Image 1 (cartoon, rainbow, N blue to C red):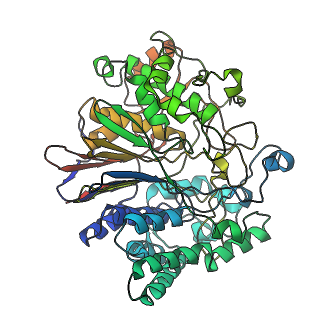
Image 2 (spheres, rainbow, N blue to C red):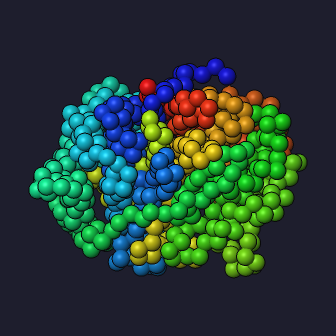
Length: 576
């Protein structure tokens, strides 16, 4: 297919990120001798400046890293936990079973520790070095891009709820127009303070100063002035975050889950997020000759949609923080289980609602979670988030999906950051596995992926989009692996998305049978899908609602790195 942009190809290093200035920040690090981890952290922090309507430095940042020399692959959860003062029935007792858009939905900010942990374990540079571009972008400003300006205008009322946020995003009482320079001076000072604390600590140590510096940057956030400002703001506004919650927090190194599809080993994050949905869906599709059906044909879209419904059903009924609930992840990931579940996919009819979950452990009705009341509206829910990936000259790879928008949580005065509002992805009702409890991680939508082939990096992949993420990732992956598309063509190809499951965000809307199609898909295909029982509606030809994947594909023969970035949002790739 003819694409709006060419794939960006290089033989040394490439980066693709949700905003072009974040890609540039990463590329500067690579050109300066940093590795993929240094560059990926630089991109991730920059996304929290340039896309601060959808990503925040005080938010979440799940990461997958591959080290070429050792062939080690790890994930860093980059996800905070509920404060210890919360109780499982808190929102049922005090807020009618809802999690309000206040500081009460705050969990411990995890992204800063995720960046610092990645640098500490696998990076080569200091926090100050990788954050330098972000400090400049926050302090001096950058030209407002059209999508952010549009988002601010459409969500002005949500920002008006927060006296600390509105003046930052609506200087002079209005949203900046595209091309106007947008500054976040408080955010710039916060990042600079961490860099200064790092530099001061590192200079006092004759040897091993880098580690001491990273620790000082971490302490500046979780124990120093930043932590004190967060706790003070929460205390003044009815929040529950304590100094102990922040001081004792550390991100977790977690195992990935994986499957092999068409000779490619696909790794995703665990069931503390929705990550397993992608490999589970691929397992369900192995028994179908999707290529023979034809790309985006009626049977192709139908089979993938029905497989996604099955995977999302298991997400709803089983996924949660494995430290607190028993998630049968090994059973859910098994091919035997997938083959059994795939028999529920019929060629002639669609499930009119979310299918029932599987029963991998013969638990009967004990596995069933409650179902929310279906939504009468036909409008698909929105999501926030961004994404970045890097492959360096050594073959190391970095894949990250940072998130936390600024319209549903207040900025901390003087800091320019939110205290992660990801509590909105928990359920207030304790009957759900992914419900509120002290120390528990909400079930996160952001979920990076990383694929290997013959023990080497093949493709880091991810996207924003809330519940659309895994769906877009499956489609882009299949476009590359089955249809031989380069990553740019795979990303630009028209996409579809089902909403026939309870959504991840409060109030967890449910749209039985709903299937969205981008307008470039053949209208006759939509009519045929309606005939199978899908409730289709049409997006524009290109819409940011379909996600905005970025990906890098490494040719296993030539080693050439090819990157794609989605023109549906201000994503760009750079390489050499």
